[in-house]
Image 1 (cartoon, rainbow, N blue to C red):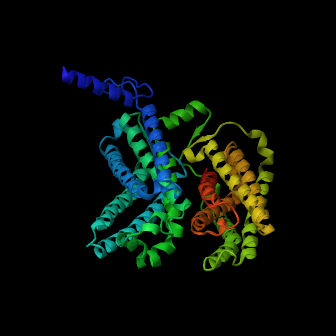
Image 2 (cartoon, rainbow, N blue to C red):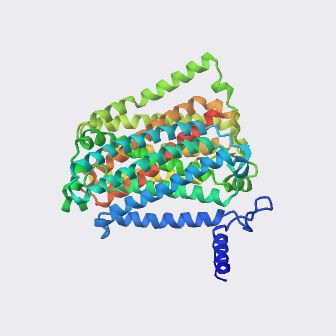
Image 3 (cartoon, helix red, strand yellow):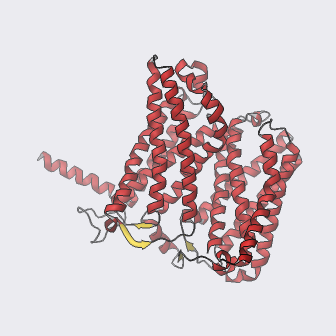
Length: 510
């Protein structure tokens, strides 16, 4: 009787976890009627909400829980990382040994997938380098304070960082191997992907809060007041000061972008994603692996044209890059006017290029339709509008801040131009999505210039996001919440530029 009750409870629990779209006879497993598509999303989103509130309370310096919460946050990250490593290995084994059972024969051909894999590889290498440097510091401190009771924390930290580095690189391998496969509606598939997404979201929260409160460059407040010899070893390490700290301006934003990019790609891998797009956009067109021969052919004239446009586009941003590099070694007031001039001119040029694009395609406005290409979630219009709103919010807030603090008028002009550039670029990209791909070659020069410009602005914004977290200049004369709020908004600013870059790259490849 006990075994029957246990079996009934087990069947009821499995049925709850299998809530989702009804399976047909060929996919029915163990009398379960659902594929788990709904229950897995409910479980993942619930845990994401819990993780967000827990991380917020643990890392907010104004929270009562902050004093003892930070080590527990690391423990949560490490546990999720281990679960995700198991999930990633499971996906690899499924792809190798049971491809016919868990995958459809049809492959998804997305022209941006190879480019995204290149970025994922570079990001993964950056994370591995960051974790390796921290592992060296942890082991060095472990041997230095070996005689102290809490020295084992560094050993635990080392194992956790090994797990994070393994997760980052293994995730790239899995995405590169199976992101172009169409997974079948299986409970295991939904829960494996949901676990990995949950880990990436948690890591993104963790990195975002570290940037928001400046923990990447200074000792957290709870350690400053009652720091022990064990805790101070890491912060006093010469490796951290001389090697890691100068690299944080690149490596910390890389972690944030890596997590966000993986979330977008993994969400696309849900089996129901493309089925949903077919239902909502029946006129949509699937990607294929054909490229535009006019643009990517072997004609020497076209090759020279591409090189010339690329060089000129880079040179437009060269003065701003040089001034930003010089300001890195001084305070924020150094070369302030020169920086505003150099940062304003490229934005003005991008606006002129967009107007040029509108002028070229104005005769084709009548052919706009609601047929759009089915791609990954980075091609989603709603997500694109949300990220553009983040850019608008940042620039409007910066104008208010500049007026309040009496900043140079040129900074206000630059913010106004950025608002105009983002507005016209967003409209331009959304119109192009609804035009025949044959029209893209007519604005190829504009597309290539905008592509390079958005890539450079994305890199600028990533570094700027880190600089905001390490500078306290903005706190003077304004509310103390301003740097924190702006840091949170900047994550959308960076994402908008990268999303625009991906969309423009897609236009060039079609």
